[in-house]
Amino acid sequence: MTATALYTDLSGYYDLMCADIDYREQSDYVRRLHELLGNGGKHYLDLACGTGPHIRHFIDFGYQASGVDINQPMLDIAQSRCAEAHFSQQDMSALQLHEEMDLISCFLYSIHYNQSIARLTECIQSVYRALKPGGMFCFNAVDKDQIDNRPGIKRNITYNNSDFCFQSGWYYSGSGEQQALQLRIEKTTNGITEQWRDQHSMVAISFAQLTELLTPLFEVHRLSHDYQRITPWQNQSGNAFFVAIKH
Ligand SMILES: C[S@@+](CC[C@H](N)C(=O)[O-])C[C@H]1O[C@@H](n2cnc3c(N)ncnc32)[C@H](O)[C@@H]1O
Image 1 (cartoon, helix red, strand yellow):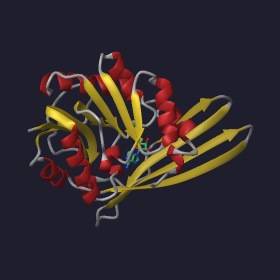
Image 2 (tube, protein in one colour; image 1 turned 60 degrees about the vertical axis):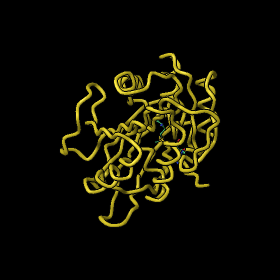
Image 3 (cartoon, protein in one colour; image 1 turned 60 degrees about the horizontal axis):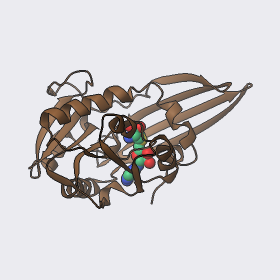
Image 4 (cartoon, helix red, strand yellow; image 1 turned 180 degrees about the vertical axis):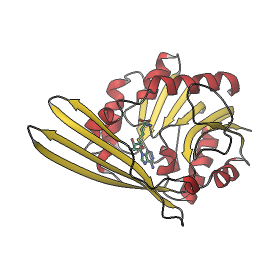
């Protein structure tokens, strides 16, 4: 089992690093999509759920929610945030559930943590088996052919008398099925700076390949990466939100 520092040793900083993500907006977007395209059921699973912010919102929307993640320190935080939910430590490429779901999500490009196209295929197949008829699978993804290799934007946050600087960005060499998520965290307290660098190996795939993997099992909708409105993806951006309805 792979572990990355951010999700194990630094799990306590994860929510701070994501402080500017609007989890409510993302969850509400998926809730609306599920209302439009789903099967009406309320059994929900979040894959690579991290510290459980989406699960919290789905419980509040009235769903019976659960989460899967590979790193136990993230699940421990998720469980304290969502006492009502069931969590299990699993690799999403070999997902095993006791009951079928109506909605399965995977946010923040975490679907790319399937380490190869073969593992991603296994993940898609296990999600398919885990869904009820008409069940919905949704996730955001980045097209390998449109990755911008420049360093990502820096975000600065002050918390508990320390100044934090977080930076993350994609890197793709231009060939092969691996891309990297590069992360840098700096913490400065009383003039002393500590620094962590983390590099996560992730699967690189084009949207055409991804659509081809999903199409035999699902009706596929590719939407623009905009959580405020539901509009089709128009080929103009390297990010998209995929919605897959089980045939
Ligand atoms: C970027 S975080 C996203 C967390 C959460 N979905 C969010 O939106 O804040 C990625 C998560 O994926 C988990 N992860 C990485 N590889 C995984 C795998 N193969 N199976 C399940 N979870 C995995 C990590 O432990 C981490 O919690």
